[in-house]
Length: 135
Image 1 (cartoon, rainbow, N blue to C red):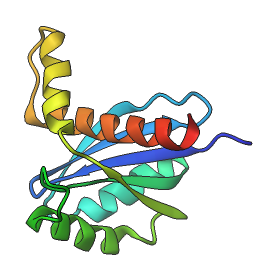
Image 2 (image 1 turned 90 degrees about the vertical axis):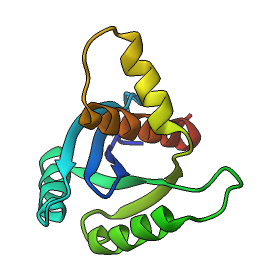
Image 3 (image 1 turned 45 degrees about the vertical axis):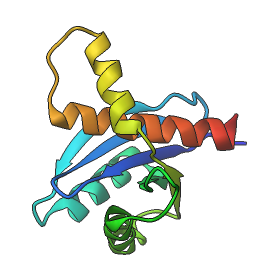
């Protein structure tokens, strides 16, 4: 099977963390942070085209009981706006990814920003998806 490129998104109301991965290598890496400022759809479209991605993996928020939240509805509405950007749009559970991202960044003992946390969280979401679907 030929490898393909995936883009992972950690969608927030202020910023969207972006990660990329190649299914041949199966390692997701933090890529960018897109500000939510009215131009975020174009910015994501540009990344998808530039990277030649055919799949967008979006972090799917739920509460600790596994139920939908206000953020879940926000993410679902956002996905409707980007559904034409890639052949496949998939959801991946994002439980605790921001917490894990912050812990990973802290362990490097270097300064980091909220945007770094978002793109790292997007990489964790995408890595989880890769492990689930590409073993």
